[in-house]
Length: 358
Ligand code: 5GP
Ligand code: MN
Image (tube, rainbow, N blue to C red):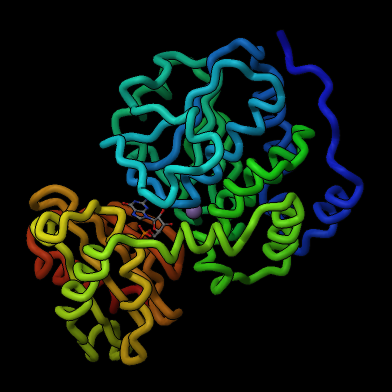
């Protein structure tokens, strides 16, 4: 069975889409959009369709994936599974996202789906054990916005100018004729606000045009913001106090532009009874330090293994630094996985900061 005709978007949303200033349609080749639409249309409604986002998923990874999954459900697809690699620990703020019923642990992923859609994943290494499923003959469409994307997959919709992967997801949903509804919009809105720092890092009016279309479905930005950014356990606040309290300022680093850094261990998490996701937002107060261009947060995932978050105010290309260390990301926000002690990690990063001044 093939997807039947679906209602188009309203004239006003079509107009909004066509008036994009720097939308994804300009960065992604028309032939790639067409190939992605053909890949979805080419799958039968009863075929297995798998959606995957990156390890330790954030709001953009989960929001763009679940929003798109709901769009596929609206098209009539009946066999949908969404998943991500690693421990099945969905951060508390995202547990009530619409479409969360489609999310399964990686152990329950389809072994050989007809179609695989991948969200917010810059490199196959971010797929953990699920990467092996890409060799199984499934048609693979990648939706992403990382400049460091390696171009893996059969169709790569990669727009480094897009504020979030949800911008790319919205465009593909639009091209598939899926009308926005409040559930899809909530997912895409969470994704958009997460990756733009609540619209602080926006570079194009098209982001607000998209936000306006999402809000017009009736979602509540205030309620979503409170749930997503402003609700944390008491223990997470106490943990933040400790982690921020041990930050170090290194004014000579990065060619004198300055580095501020801190770290959090699994022991810190245990002591405060917290799960790792509560550390994700801690890079924000660190990056606000006026005396440093570069901010680094070194987060212990399992003993001796660290997820490193890098941020720059523009004086250093931290994507190049992260890529050199096996990770990736954006010019002003990037990350990689490291081993050893936090001091070892900083010792690795420091010379690379000097090598990638902008
Ligand atoms: P965060 O510091 O918020 O985890 O990530 C910042 C940016 O860097 C995000 O765009 C994220 O996708 C990317 N990033 C973080 N860690 C890694 C990594 O280990 N590998 C790659 N390729 N990108 C990463
Ligand atoms: Mn993203």
